[in-house]
Length: 393
Image: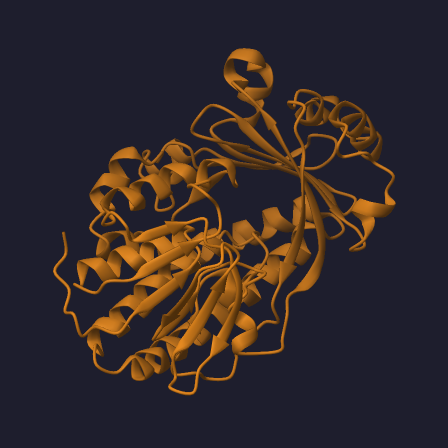
């Protein structure tokens, strides 16, 4: 167990996702205790999202500081960075074979979200996370502390409050009136279980990574996960209320899949198999974003990390990496300024604003390109230009 000074001010982290867990673990390794409040009754990371690519310059740096990089490298899937880009007729524009390109040692290895969270949870001191603590409101006190009111009736008071609670953060309103905006993209999440065994032709077509079929301002995206499933995202540029006005009964999966197939009626049959072969379970997701370059009013006792600070579309692959990098920078700033959390927040936020604004710009550009006219060809051209720049360095 970590020995902590009795005089240490209380640090509360709202949200036990990858960002919150990384922050708590790096603080723990610096001899600084925190409490993580999680709204769910248990860890649900295996039920949320799919596979993640962890970037060398951000997510992996955070894992190194958390003492987990070697273990991560042991269990991560370096061989599953294949990437294909096609149009609706299944014409291939990009066909990257990660093993051929990198000898099987890429810089963005894959790991499932649940496995990553298991890795972080394993080393956290028992009792760090309080499950079943859904934040209802946070009340600033005159002494600079914050009073936390939870749905279970508990009221707690802390010195430093960190919102790691995602796009719809309950902490963000303490700092700003700004809220997230709908990005224009809605995604329908499906799963093809045991793809290699149940649908070998489609598994071979998808290869060992991601498949993006893009056309008509729509997309069918396939993502191989570590448990053998292909996670599918049928993606559409539609109005915010489309889920309610489309007439598609998303609570009736079989009929919903038929209606989705109608939306992709003139697409290649193998691409439509991504919808046909999916299990009868559907999740709907609107993609939200905060304004690029978003900043909030400084508060010496409150700050944000991850999606709470800079939610952006997933089309630059930066979400979890940004959250973990935020956690790294904030934890080290706190460690440098153990007697002055206000100074630590200033140091962290200055770095975070600069870094996140660049990534938010990249993410928005990628989103617009991915669902533009002739998107497959444009994405191929962009990737080619990146490759040429890399080779010229």
